Length: 472
Ligand code: ADP
Image (tube, rainbow, N blue to C red; front, side, top):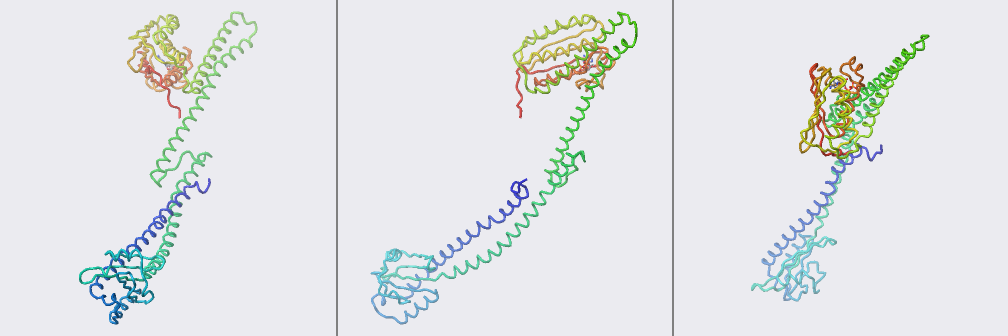
């Protein structure tokens, strides 16, 4: 089993990813939000402050070229409190005051300045220089715009905060990742343990050390899998048992006629001057045993073919009335030997999609049984009926009936209700097993009601249209 396909690896990977991904996604988003909200807050605050400075101070002297040392000192104080710089531009966008004195006399043609001279107040953050620049218009007493007031504020504190934040996050991240890895490994081991246990137990079942999985109490799912496994194992055991029983039954059934033939042949070989009549009589008996052996083999072959071919039925529309009449024509002479009356009653003409050969076997077996397990002067009634979905065949007799404790077994292979009688009658115990198998292949059903010494009724129900079962 490759490591990447193992449950342990997948659970570990999922827990680690679930622990780390939100961290990796959230941290950059938080940093971004912190940075932009700080810039926005500082920008709007600075604009409000610039507006206040404009209202409190009169810059008209500067704008006309006068010196004002008091105002100079005040502006320098404000600029240094921002760790930045203040500039005043006149209406021609010429720098008339600069607290850093670097740009005095320069003309500033910058978008924000142009917009400020038109009356807007704006802020701009320079990510490379880490400076926040605010530009607001300067108005005279009449409210006319006479210049632009610019404040630069150093935003170094933002980077310092972010760096501090990142170093805390890294430490937390390392702790979270280590915890995620440890939890992931432990949970994977814990999740996997019951499966490893089950795999070991299945191995033990395979090697026949144990017969079933021990009770599993770890998780509900494992409990259900293990109980289902036990059901399957139970079924396999019973299949194995019935296979063994079947093989021993087959051997026994095939050996019986051979033993009889051997006894008959030995007694002829062992005696001297055997009269020809006795030879004939014994040969007739040997012939009967050969017929019986052939019948058993034929029945076995029918069963095997049915098991093997599964869904393969040779289905075609068949006139069921004609088919039953044809079968009865063949069986009536046999019934006549015991003076058994065979009556067929059909309620309506029925044409159904069936496999003619297998369906003939079904009707023949049921009617043959009704005749075989009957009494002198008895009767057999066969009725045929249908509705829009199914057709129904009922085979009823007033014969020997089936003992109550045998009814559940008569469809089993080699089962005979009355062994001594059946042997005398000549059954193999396979007829009803074949019948039930053939009916099941047609998606039909067979039911039996019987009372000892009163008679039996076999009810068959088969769909008029054959629907092939899906083979998965
Ligand atoms: P068999 O070859 O012995 O007839 P089946 O499988 O056809 O085998 O029948 C199984 C057993 O069911 C029979 O041995 C018989 O005891 C009983 N049985 C079947 N049909 C009838 C019936 N119509 N009346 C009484 N017993 C029946």
